[in-house]
Length: 263
Image (cartoon, rainbow, N blue to C red; front, top):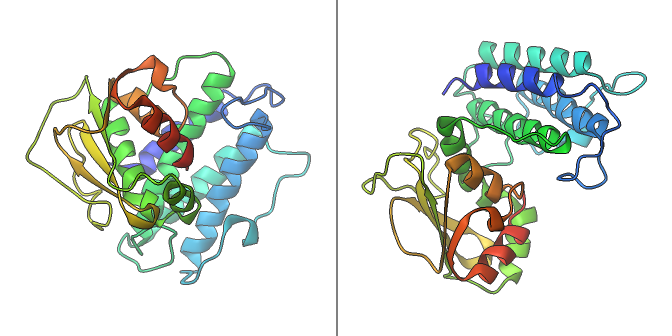
């Protein structure tokens, strides 16, 4: 997938939704659209700093020298930051070794991560305006796998998952609008998990210390969720309620797992 082009498209869509920067964003409690724009723009500039300086040690977004706009964020500031990010990504060797908070220590990790930051926050802005978000199926499939690939590295997620006491529990996601392929598998620790997106079915197994493993393909789980793949993406990001999808099995497990796994 061309993540740089996806960043460009999603930035333009988000910028086009930010006419009134005072609109509350329910899926990001306490935020307005201005806060959403500031957050995304800060992430873009942070990533540019990381890439340009080939940062090798942890440096989080609020530690980076990011200059915020005078008078608050605006769509133009968002577009400028995204354009710079895309330019730097295209100029950078995707295989360049550097720090990431995920399992891959390559520059290419940041292109994929920033693309889905934008997809999800564009959805946040649309939901705030009462719009029905649309995410293309191929983007949603890859987005689910990007999230599953990175969750084991997110300590702010693994800690609450460990506290659930559900080691060995399984959650099956079944997209109803993609082809089914039961032959390809991947684990969350596979550094090449992003190389080939699955076909719309995944089983998540809760492992020790809050970590997860996952596999592509059809299988039974303690709880199973069926629905359009875009809705499954929004479900695992906490932007869609399980009540809007078809759930079989242990609904309480699903509800508790989703609350703890929020990225």
